Length: 129
Image (cartoon, rainbow, N blue to C red):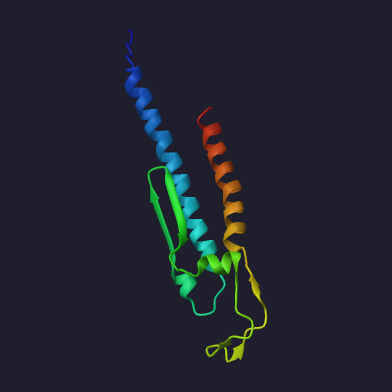
């Protein structure tokens, strides 16, 4: 009694490649979701507009998380202001010529790079690469 096994190497390789891509895509999607959730927790809140402008998308092996609010860069990196200008919403005059940025997004992205790098390395290790 014998059994003949024939393996189509091209098909097998293609399936392995598809599986690896799926695993990488899953890791990216998971990371993007975690980043968006972290940003919702750490983003400065005054009116809630900045938190409400967080958007995320995942497409194949790419993910993107960011803000649609026009003033997000000013909160992140800081901004100049006109000393002495009266701001009715605040009910006072501006005193400082520059408001320091809070760098919450930069810190989150740095942490995310480390997490994603480790996840990809783990996937490659599991795949025998």
